[in-house]
Image (cartoon, rainbow, N blue to C red; front, side, top):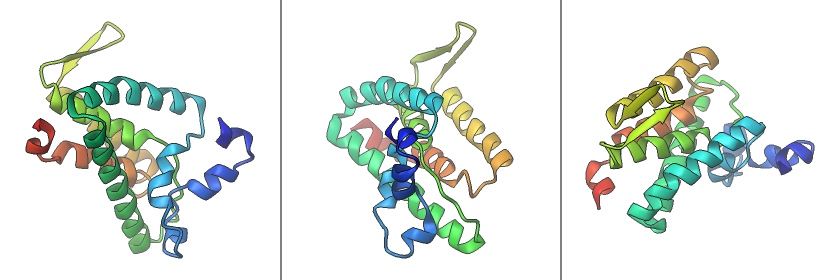
Length: 169
């Protein structure tokens, strides 16, 4: 809400903006997921963190969950910077969509037999949830462009390919 009320100051200083990261503003590699620009994005991100992150925190512990999230956020930021440098796209991103996707995928992999029900109509579990989240991100990437959606795509792939042994410990 602060990002909406401050006239864009917070989003300006926290956004994943590769051109500024290359000039030394490296904090942007980790601050971009903390600033949501729309109410719906804020609600969905908070629900994902509360529900999926809460269950993973109980299973893994806070330290391991924090390490998982930091690894994926950094990977998403670094890969986005490299892609932006290679293709001169001019990315500037904020929002927790990438971490929400990663938490949903990690949850689905950690609890493969748990059922997730959407609006009482669609019931999915494990691998189907992972496929749905990845497919949704790919569809958005086709619309917005793969470099613009690089943080989400990297987070999805990172969570989907995260070593199973590290999930089980």
